[in-house]
Length: 566
Image (cartoon, rainbow, N blue to C red; front, side, top):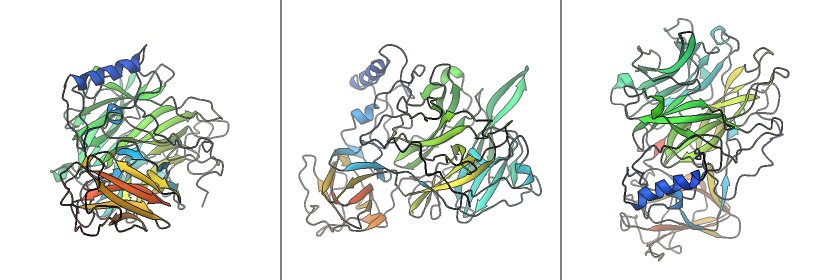
């Protein structure tokens, strides 16, 4: 088994930021652009313009998605809901994470940003079948595509590119580690499930779809020669089992290759991230549009596609390329109370002399409105190896579906490339897995000096407080305060049973209170006191079992719905 990464990490000299960092939204071009955008948004709020009210209390402007001009690459401002949060934040949906300052009123705790670890068994999938070796480079890896837990078959399912731009294949697994390429009847003797030519694709398992024949969606970036020119667009297919795909049921208008689609269940829309190569120094970036159905209304004219994402001015350039990073792709998914964005950053060309593939890795961003993404860390979340011959020596890309919830861990699948020939160095694509603690993107930490966190004013309808915390060597306690900051009896620190465990779901209890029914529906604050430990998340559940009613990304064993509700 080959090593998963080099001991030399080119980004280690850049420590994760202590304070909240900027999001990856495109900044405005032109003189005074940032001030112009801020003025527009604040004017809409001040004049009483009322847009959509979100699950978390954020009120969108009447013009949504925002219309912002061409990217300039300058550092953008914080979104309005971070600078001016709701007076009362509803927290009934999902585990509440600390990837930004949205929930934080006051704290003396220190934020630590965490990154997943590559699994020692990587690569889990390699191009070892004849049909995976067709074209200029062997391929057995998702180019977005999708990795999902299918509760109907009780299997992990991984769709991937088989052979370079040749076909889409399906592998299945019972544990997410050992994968099988079962023969299918689409192309007998192979695991190919769709033969259409392709670039990137998105496979989506929609557990909220009432028609079982439409459970799976395939958005396939397809190319044809039209009037001597190659044109790309999404062709959309539906399936009941993810194996047998029907005829084309919808098409987008012209796109670039490496475009992708995701569902935002918080707003019940389908988001289309369209790659665009800008002529400015920003380079590769994204346009965005959204639609309710995602099939019949998938075709949008270019003027309907607003500028969306680009690499931030604070993104880190590699010393060996000196190339300003560019945004190649984003795969989005709802995780608990936020949208998770996995952002592929391009950092350098493929090198024919050494055979090293194109340099791409994956960073993480988080959104509370589905458009603006906050990035607490600019280091790669899913990194390349610096060792020649490793499966992820270059071109690491995220898989559609984002991540899966497997017990106390999150599973992130990704493609990587070993390298190829001088004529085509960007080859040898395999599939690997990285794991992270559940909710483990960021924690608020205390050493042996006790620290506190007081949340902003919130409201809930549940009855049981839970935390995800690592306090085995220390102690965590909680209090509930009224709007003035006064303790509400009996929810004091003194009557809180101390938490001295390390677990992703721990009930918080107080002497003299069976549950939180007495304060449900009222505006309150939580104050956590922590010593020698980490706090990853908190939530108020309607059940003693600790369900969060938040979204579970691409699912996982034990989940039969898109939310944690069982």
